Length: 85
Image (cartoon, rainbow, N blue to C red; front, side, top):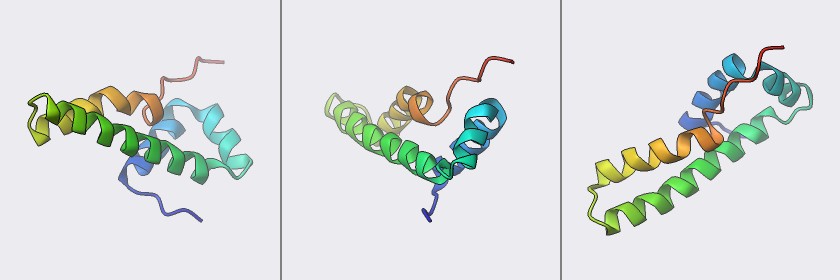
């Protein structure tokens, strides 16, 4: 079993509330923990890359972190809500 960190817990709560069909399907097939861990890993990797790039262009560490978070969070973690059935 994968140990979930902060971003994965955030995604789990978000997916459960806003993407219930996807959440149930992943949970039913036993893929939820893996999908959450992958979303977290992709977020962290992409954020690290963006932070390095932003710092190289003059952003402070805090600014780079905030900007990277804002650019990446909706790609893997805070997915758009599913359409109503």
